[in-house]
Structures are given as structure tokens and as C-alpha cells.
Image (tube, rainbow, N blue to C red; front, side):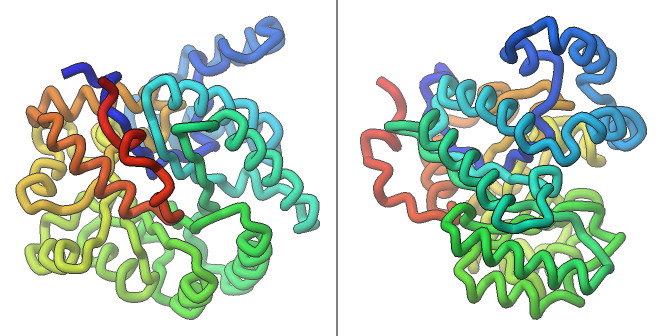
Length: 328
């Protein structure tokens, strides 16, 4: 099996986590970025979550923070590569780093640039949509302001969903169930990172109080048989990110990754890069990793693709059967 020929869907990739030395070589003039490239060569790939928090994160914050224009350049390079890797549908998470303008109308203009670039690069056979990802917070007023701003962006037709990231135990979803209800009423898909570092109770919370359609990572789900049954019966989609999970969670051997349990249970899941910058990975690498480890067949990949398309926050009926199939 040639992984390049497999048509792929990616539902979990953060735009602010695209920066590494390899992607920068695509920017011109290259001389302008030589110092930055040298710095990233010493940081990427990261070795652990601590390495990220203490080294990579602080280093890139000053580069990408409030710099949506620069992130747009990185995104364009990433989308070109994704198209080359036979991705037919992507949902990209635009982060708080791109949500930089206090004036919502200026912010919408910036997101229109992201939309225009995605349409230009995607073209026939590759559709790209956007979510807004925000961190967990204990600030009620901040969440209310965010709700109003995100609804404006949704009304402009620029996003199809929202995503919640961050350490599960720091701030829970439950106090903001009314806000997540408003997201749902507005027709936004809801993705919540949960069960990445902590237990299944955070996945239950995301489903009950956050109205999550998809769970980012969801690794801890398989510690709770009742939760596994609930996920399967309610067609909850899990977004697995193999390399990210190996670097950043307790699963240090790919053979132990819960993906094997999802396969056995027939649970809907996708294969994603998550943070291709600090991890120096790409979508083909992720597919090759799981194929070699779990001996996935072409039929398995067909099922993963169709399940991922069904879990998309934007209707995908117009993606033709021919475009869904493997390359000849």
C-alpha cells in the first residue's frame, strides 16, 4: 500500500502550531528568516510537554502572537503540502493568536483573507474549513465577550465550529454550559479537547455540559467501558493525533495507543497532525505510523475517511465519490 495514494481527511490541526524550521524554508526571501530557522532547529522536534511549555512555547509566542498575517503565510505553505499529501478535506483551528483585533470588523477582514487563501489553494478536490480554538478559562466575562465575537464571525460565514483546548483540570466546561448551548443554537460544531492528559470524567463533562460533537484526543475514554459504549452508540467522533500523543501524553509506545481499541470497537475516529510545527510531522507520516503499527488495510482507511467526513462540521455531500476514493 502506498500511503500517498490514500485520500485523507484532517480535522485537528492548530494554525499557531505550524512553525518549525522546515516550513520556514518555503518563505521568501529566505535570508529574512535565517536567524529564526537557526533558533527553531535547536527546539524542534520537542521532546515532551515540559519542553513545549518551557522552551518552544515561549519562543514562538513572541513571533506569532497578534501576527495573523504571518500565520496566514505559514498556513498557506501547510495547505499546499496537505494538498500534495492527498488531503481532500481539512478543518483548521484558528487560535487566539489570530483573534488579534479588538474591532470585530477588522478581525472579520483578516479572517476573510484566510478564507480567500483556502479557496485559492484548495481548488478542485480539496476543501478547507475553519474553527476558532480558544483556551479554557475561569473568567466568565471573557467567555461572554468571546461568544458575541464568535457569533459575529459565524454570521459572516467564516467558521463552521469552535474548539476548546488547554489542560483539562485547570478550568472545567461545566460552568459555561449556557454559552456552549448558544454555540450549538447558532449551528456551530463543537470540539472539546478532553481525555488527553486526564481521565474519562473530563470527556463525560465535555459531552454533557459542552455539547461536544467531537472529542479532541479522547485517549482516556477507553478507561471507562460505559463511556466507550456511549461514544459508540451516539456516534461521537474521536480525533487521534498519534505523534502528538506519543510526545505529550503517557502513551510513549505507539503499540499502546488507544487507536487499537477504537478499531476493535468500531468507533469513529480520524488521524491528525495536531501540532506539525513542534513535532516536525505531516499527515502522510501519521498515516504511515498507524498503518505500520496496526496493519491497517485500504478498507480500514476507507472507513476512517468516510467516518471523518461524516464528522465534519460542514456538509461534505458535494465531495464526489471519485474524490473520496483512493487514487488509482
